[in-house]
Length: 105
Length: 131
Image 1 (cartoon, helix red, strand yellow):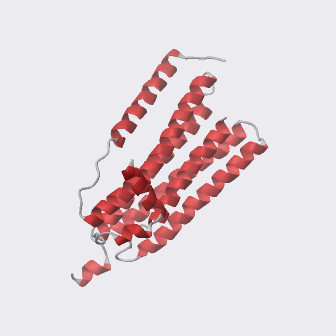
Image 2 (tube, chains in turn orange, brown):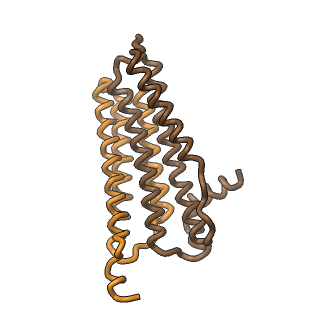
Image 3 (cartoon, one colour):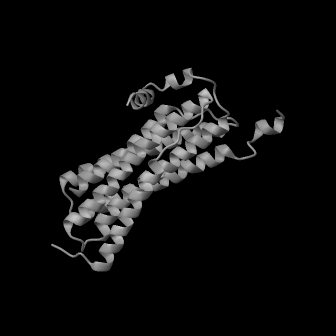
């Protein structure tokens, strides 16, 4: 291995992965905004407010997972994603759907 | 069934994945991670679609609207759970030097999305106003 390879991945894999996390947080933000709109739309009730608050918690959870992962992406050879991180990201996504069902019905 | 139980155990005992085989080239792991994230975005898009059906098609009969929204939300949940499962299985296969797992999930999801799209076209063309 030459020194140049150690400095930077020629395929920019860490950058692409970092941007993939960024896109995912943006998608989650759109869903969270739709959830907020839903709560306003259907009349502000205590149940809807609780569902929106929990959705916001799930959104923050996903942002935190993404932030921790992106911070570890700054090195030339990042460690593989920890299964805990993958599970947390998926569970936040599932939480969005669950609170959506709670809001719709 | 046993295979599913094994995978689920791996979700909650993450260090076990490191016990098996050799650490693959970091680029393969990152590619697997990006595929996982793409599936998570697909799940988020389906969930967003569920919200959108409810919010932007107010003149639909309640039953049709709720059915479509619920279907999209359920598809989103399935998609997110499948994403972790598939990621774990790919990661393990790479560590053991096995072939990557094949899956009929993309076909199933494709069919579901097609059916929902056709239903939407029918609803938009013929009204289906209720209440």
